[in-house]
Length: 274
Image 1: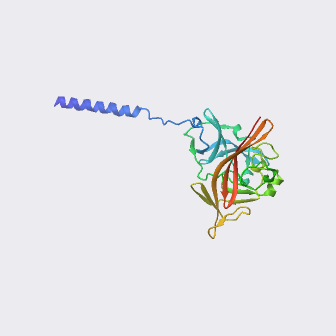
Image 2: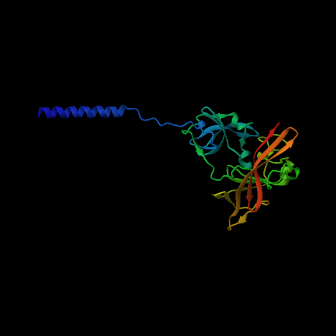
Image 3: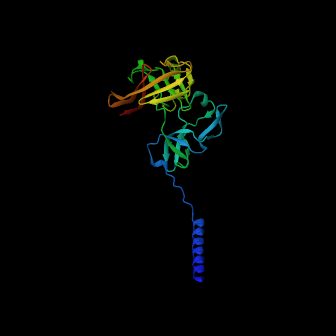
């Protein structure tokens, strides 16, 4: 009987040691990945509110810091070590009136560029943020300057710029304007000729469909119900062409689109070699 009692006592001691060990054992620390190692990330979703380099606009001047809300989708401009340069991307003219935009958004790098704070994101509407210009493609001809342009903003508006509006601000296309700089192109800041809220959208294969309540003069949408018009945007092919000027070469790359029943294109890149 004494042996049994001693065995039970020993078992209880061992169990107690195990319990104490489990109690004091450090909990497993969750590992987070550094997103700067992936150069293929174009957009991220914020997992928590944070400052991303933007300020309120007060009488045209910089006001106080804007804390970007959790869940916001932001464009990645570039990363360094564990920091990232972020942009709201193309936002509506209305929203721009309340935001002070730095000379260049990448002049502030948001820290903690890892999976604890950010989730890599792929746009569900692939044409969002792509300025599409009327025409079959880039021709390097003055006759094709100032052709109407439209794009869908990151905050869900379709903004359309007419030939007259583009001429007034000397915006030939997304690369060429009186500013001489793509980033400083007036197109990104001027009031559009027409703007409508995109109510919903869907993408099937290479075609995106956007739905809104007011027709846009200059686009060939279809009325599909008592409430909505539908604009189809179908991606075509990638093209390029070069022009030679003495020892210099000018090359432009673009992608064709069919918008409704009309040709449009998006200039992806341009380059001058000398």
